[in-house]
Image 1 (cartoon, helix red, strand yellow):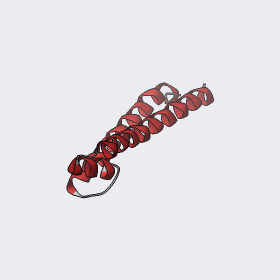
Image 2 (image 1 turned 60 degrees about the vertical axis):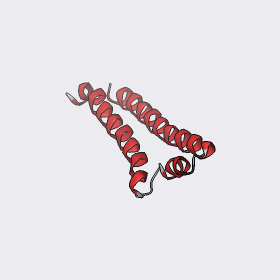
Image 3 (image 1 turned 120 degrees about the vertical axis):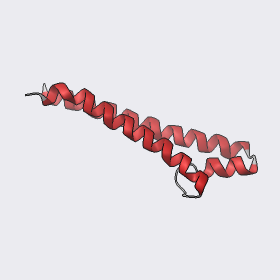
Image 4 (image 1 turned 90 degrees about the vertical axis):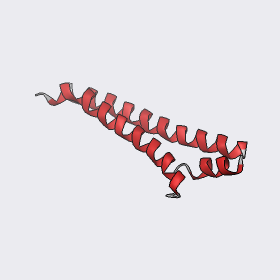
Length: 82
């Protein structure tokens, strides 16, 4: 069965796409599309350091949580399929 050998590559691709999408969602706030970067962009417009910091930290936190969750999923899948 070839699926167990492909799992690291598949999960790596999914992790990469989720992290990229998170970054794009932050940047989408520059065109007033809302999303994750609304607080960050609002802080940049008003030069409010607290909003910039919180917007950045929250965006990074979401990306890290998603990455951690997918790493855990990858480990569980590896254990289950072996």
